[in-house]
Image 1: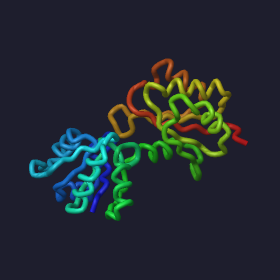
Image 2: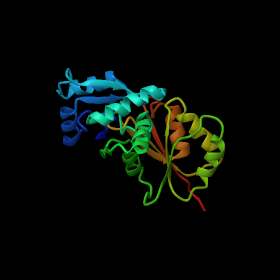
Image 3: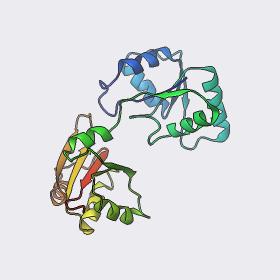
Length: 226
């Protein structure tokens, strides 16, 4: 069985008894970064000298994938990303593909995710909402922003620290007039959550009231979507 193990997105106390037990009992681990995984296990007091660690990247070659398939056939295995739920925005998706194509049993443990806390905290009516992951860096970005501006429901997306302010200014240039929520560094020491009119949010960026550090979840709610 392959277990996809969510890891803390910031605060190491955000763990579950189930995944800690699995990490204690499982001797084969596939990791986005073996160093990060060993550091986490060390913090939790989990002995790992007898465990084997196998790195998985987006650039994994076919012969390496065959190696993982052999591991999965012979062992219980835990897959861990650096932070959050593996398989969302990291190489874990490769293992999902391997498992579904080769009838390998797997399960995904619930929990670590930056999106859900950001959605709840925003204060928007989120009985229905849309999530678009990351906006395109260039091609198609303006088209998607125009589509979001016309949305009748809130839209949430992840954004790089280097593009967050520029992205919001692009919304303003395209006549977005609604509310914006910013969730930054969720569960970490410098967690920041702000909701306001887009003009206010941009001023907060410009005056450093919103610090351009860490990871962002941005939510937008058009004022007059219809």
